[in-house]
Length: 295
Image (cartoon, rainbow, N blue to C red; front, side, top):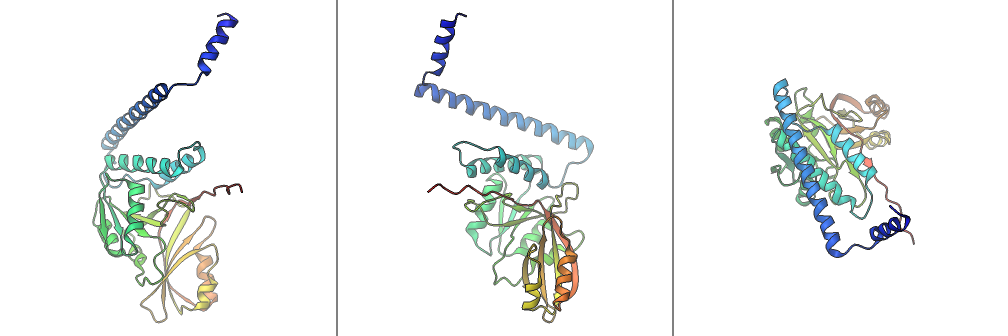
């Protein structure tokens, strides 16, 4: 090709595309995305067959460690005009739906703390294909999950201050449901489904992520001083317990910290430790800080 021909070809390539050309490109990309989704479904079908051959099918196919990692990578690579909220929601629906295809499950949710925020969280993270079953009370959710084969439960991670039911004590027994995730995986101030939610399921030791460990503590001699003594790194929910001057605590500990640090601080403040039980774990929340707008 001569230099003049190369120059002419480059000029043609740099020429603005017409509306028809641009719409044709959009159609091509849409078809390619659909094709990739169908290819993904074929791989999922093969995965189900492998599980059947190996005798590992059944139960929940939810894998919180893998999902948290996928969402972190999604945030890190995202760029362009498409809002992160949209792309996160699309990926959540894809992941949740293909998980459902592998092993059908329902999502049970406690609406007693507010229906709209919990429904928004469920639909954002699990879409409309996965059945949504409402409950008015956390223990109803836990009982439903315990009686299921592989269902998930959604419970507010920060219950109303007026809530008096320490529902997490129902997770203490060895075979009881456990906390396996906290949503949203990606946290930001303007998240469209930003209600902090715990996901509970049957224990899934082979897929559990242990970054943040969650404990149920029962103490006697609860007081304002005991509350102030809790280390700042611990995220704590407190509810009255049956014991005299007692309290039930749901304590979430970030990586690098042990429950002994909390129980020791409580003991020094005069509280007695009646019981300590690990009730689950989850991935550390990926906190996204958006740059401040220019003045």
